[in-house]
Length: 235
Image (cartoon, rainbow, N blue to C red; front, side, top):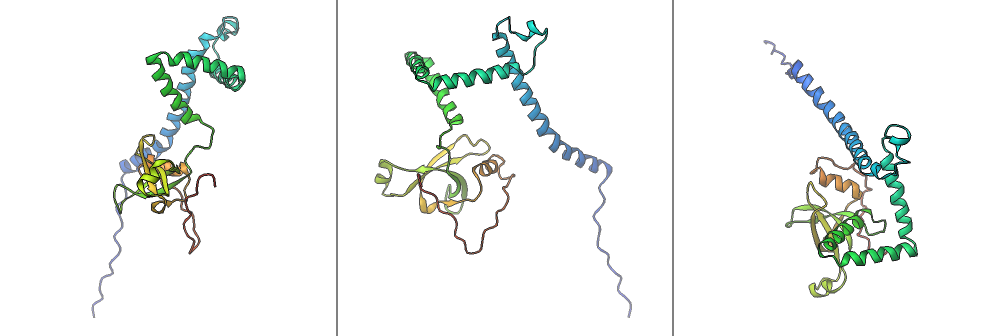
């Protein structure tokens, strides 16, 4: 019998020099671009603060008059020290009275009042140190059954809403949008329809911002272990 010819596996064609160089360039770009942009933004921010703060320093203490040249980052240091001192004074009795007096004056200015209150709410939301942040990440079926979306558990829904809806165990969740998680929807969801996630708030936020490209690491779960329940507020 004639022997059948041995079929050798087809090897993929070797990439050309141009293809290898293109791949190396894209890999380097992924590494260099975030680092460069981070350094540039930090440098530009410090320079912007210096340009606004250093001219406010008295002439006798201005580094251009004392050392003959400007000190990069001095404006940032002065801004941080000044802001810290203002925060410390605002916590005292006299500071609170001065702050309330200034806010009462601002409240009498129609346009300035709206701008000030809006900026104050944004600042309090971003820099608040209280425990009013989201409790955990979760999954909810949205916008219809069978489609899942990542959301953040805010708190238990209280007041007239549970009474008028006939659902006593409602949870307030925030459904962020992609790629801007600062906008989204407030949804009132029954606790039984919420699927808690083991990932942290930061990991869930990265998943939303990246449109699913940056996935959190998998956490091993023991067999037969029930998923965690959504904790009640104050528990």
